[in-house]
Length: 53
Picture (cartoon, rainbow, N blue to C red):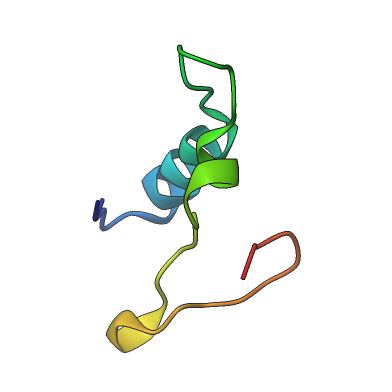
C-alpha cells in the first residue's frame, strides 16, 4: 500500500493514523502487522525516533 501526500501536516496525520489503526478482527495495530514508515526525499525511507525498521 502506498499513500502519498504533498503537505507536511497531511503526511504526519496519515502516518499517525496508519500507526494507531487497529484491525477489526483481532485488534492488532496496523504497524504491528506491516512496516509503517514515511518516505523522505527521492523515495528514501526517512528513519527517525519511533519509526519501526
